[in-house]
Length: 129
Length: 163
Image 1 (cartoon, rainbow over the protein chains, first blue to last red):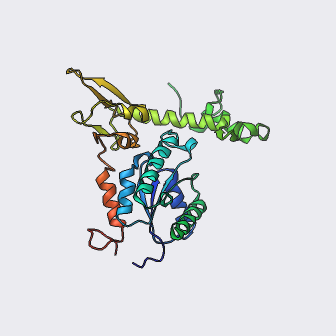
Image 2 (image 1 turned 90 degrees about the vertical axis):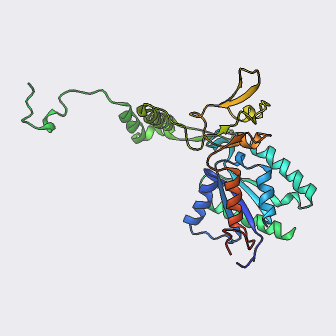
Image 3 (image 1 turned 135 degrees about the vertical axis):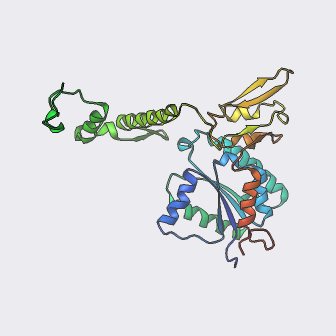
């Protein structure tokens, strides 16, 4: 497979995050084929080890895509995600990969356009870095 | 004995029934003057639901509860987590992220976390918070997520790699 764009792994939560990806498909929006979506039950399931594993396997950037805090299926506060996110950003900075290669995004349910926009912005930023 | 010769349609309207909750909702939805009842407004970053919306949500909750109670025996979700008593050292980090985990003291006097498998929704926040790896999930284990990542990666030579 040709790599035209930076490889991005998106950890999408099973609820609003994945619904954005599905909405993008249903609305026939296109995003680069280098974006790989991994479904998890909740973003709080994704720990720094899994994010670093994605980088080890060749990802140029990792995006965490989850629900807005008031619409979380599990009633979770967004600080659960932010804590692990900040920790992993620190590790990425120490490793010299660059903290900006990890991004956390919250989208409302079914926001396909928002997902494509976020992904394209992120790819552009990763390619510039 | 009741005579059914007239058919069921004759019986309709004989007894005046009080309107059920469903009809009240239907009336409120149809009435243009009661628009505010069904509007959801955003107040200070939180969505405040209209009365109609709340009643519908309540009925949906009652239906979900009835489904569970009708089973007779409650089964845990397949996503419910397991806590290994040998590995748990009782630090309590998981309790900070989950309302369904509690700390129990065993007969030998050591503290150990215990989860209510019926209530566990399987979000996996406790797995992330656990420093010893004592908490596992039958589905969506670390190894299965890593297998997915490996399958999606562009690296050649990996089993299941998409070339």
